[in-house]
Picture 1 (cartoon, one colour):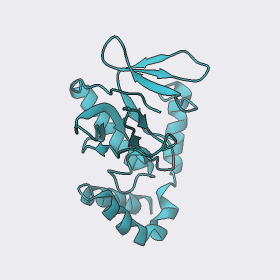
Picture 2 (cartoon, rainbow, N blue to C red):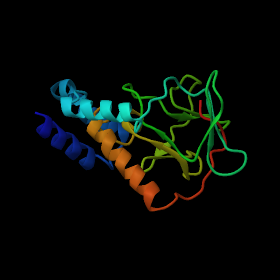
Picture 3 (cartoon, rainbow, N blue to C red):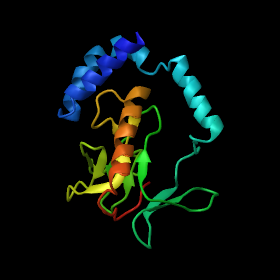
Picture 4 (tube, rainbow, N blue to C red):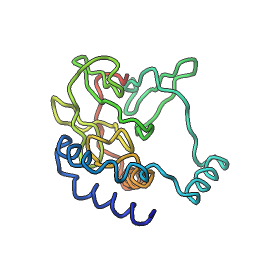
Length: 189
């Protein structure tokens, strides 16, 4: 079933790329009972690979949610503020965590919210390369969404293979050339 479901999911994601979010949701909701059982299943081989990456330090997981993410004051990149930890600097932000689909919104003051907790705002557009775009200007930000957070752009996101393909595409882009410089005029909540 693993090979068959992978092909089905990749085909659905490919075919529905240009569809509106509401159309994708309506179609998928008709068939959710057929595929829900298999989407999140992780084959033993993949689980062992992930465990190996965690063990050798190639992969790390930071628990918790950042208190805020703000543009770096001295140039491109971001400062990530964690509760009870030092501020960290990152050149790019890629949100690829979680099982539940976050409600991504942009508040009038520029705050980008991943969980909708700060209240309603504008839905930012997600570009074809999975970048968050400013809802007012349409400009792509230096913020990418993968996995569950890409649900407004990708049909079936709660599947490790989907997130892996998305991660590879973003990593290939980083490796090929530095993405154009843009700034987020607010903070990430």
